[in-house]
Image 1 (cartoon, helix red, strand yellow):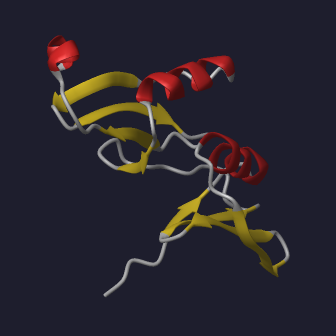
Image 2 (image 1 turned 45 degrees about the vertical axis):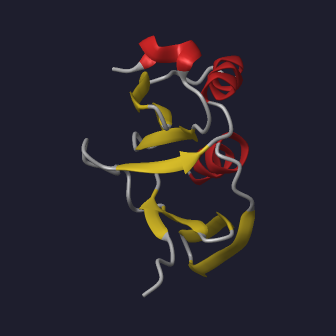
Length: 132
C-alpha cells in the first residue's frame, strides 16, 4: 500500500496555499473547483502531497492537539531565521531528543502543528547540551 496524500479542510485557501508553498516549499500540482463554493488544491513534491479543501459553507476547522505533519529541512537553525523574518512564531522547540534529530513546531494558518525536522549525521561532540 502507498500513502497518497493528507487532506486538510482550510478556513482561508490563499493563506494556506501561501503557507505550504512559501514556508514549507511544496509547489502547486493542480487546482480543481468541483462545484460552486468548493475549491481543491494539491501541493506536493515527490511522495509528499497535501490536499487543501476550501468550502465556503465551512467557517471553522479543528485539528486535535495530538496530530502534526512533519517535513524535513536541511537546517533547523536556518529555518528558524527564515521563519522569524516572515513573522512566523515557533510554537515549541528546538528539541534534540537524540543525536540524529533536531526539530521545531510551528502552526499552519488553520492551527495544525507542523514539525520541521533536521536529520543529523556525523559527530555531535560540539552540541552535547542540546538534548531535551
